[in-house]
Length: 372
Image (tube, rainbow, N blue to C red):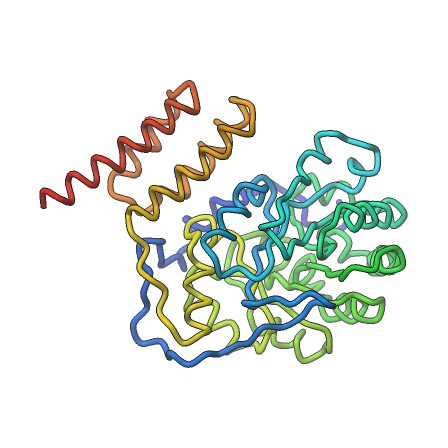
């Protein structure tokens, strides 16, 4: 398949920078209450095949982000119904890549767990799906929505929306191979002129998928512009299997608004969870008609240090430092003097030095607050 004819290959937009650059971004995780919202429960749990999704909130798969450490942090905070592993290459997995298989480690506390696979060969995708099942995952998910150039060039991810026959053969091959629930995540289409999400959604249902998730942007949009939630409603009305919506969920009131506007079964949250790891707990409380407890500075301190200590204890120094620098940029957004900490970390040589700096940062804030 020649991707150049699709007209969507271009300069990759950093997958996480779009959140803070978006003009629609209005919230930081310092805001934890939203006056004026109805306190009435709006949405109940649903099932993907035999797997209950309760609360009906799903962590989206994000490359380099939703590893076992971040997933465990979110599960411990609470409120997430299903967590998704960062996507896995079917090609690498079926060729025995140890690096790829090492990415697939998980803990029982994460359940229900979905593992997402991507690729363009139906045989290898079905073999990868079988591996996911043997590994003990609760759900296997097929990626047909990733807009990154390196994925598109391999005729995988969102590129499959340009070849629905191939997409359908992959879904059917995976369904024939596994007994656990099978889901598919996709976008509106390659671009506005080739919006075929309804056709792909119907193909998913016809070939035995137990649910779908729609990121309501095109591949060309990547993470820019505004997600078109009206298309989520259209997909929900067209299918009888569960439909989860994804796109522009940055705060609990966004999730509630998506349910109200679309009638979707679940809400999938990606980049919003990186900046506000409490978003699932806050949203789940809203669904119960409650208010989540305010997030304290001590909560933030323990969450950040807990995450970084897990990385220190289980990963090599270089990898752990890379991860810590990535997450610090998100965790400190909106914090007083957070920019100073972000600038300082670039010169720190070890994980222990980094953890000490974070402790000093919060100790200084605590002292300043007590003196005020």
